[in-house]
Amino acid sequence: MVNQYANEIWPLAVYFFMVILLVITMLVLSWLLGQRRREAATNDPFESGIVSVGDSQIRISVEFYLVAIFFVIFDLETVFIFAWAIAFFELGWQGYLSMLVFIAILVLALIYEWRSGALDWGNKMRIGLPAARRTQQRGAVEGKQ
Image (cartoon, rainbow, N blue to C red):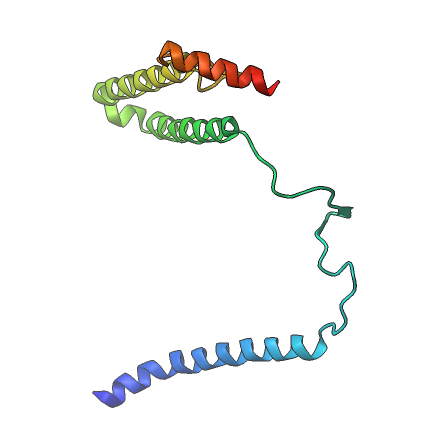
């Protein structure tokens, strides 16, 4: 039984050692054939023939991420709707009613996002903030301009 196990495992062992040998060979060859000298421009960021200008650490608005997340969420919902459309006749009335409920929930979510200001860009006045907080927020926005 041990001999049978050894006969079954030896191709895997050979493959494993060949992969290790290949990795070591590539590392040694790149070290031997690679560039030894460093120039001033070696570590400069460079992409598509354009030398970078400025700092790469820029601040991106949260609205960008919100819109991206909303896009992904609503894009995934279309996948479910397409799958339902393909199986329309097999699902019958029960599938039709469940899809109506699904789309109604999506519409309610979209209306909520729209009314709460999540889809608005620029200066925001969120619904539901206390009056004192809205005044602070407005003052902070006006102070930055």
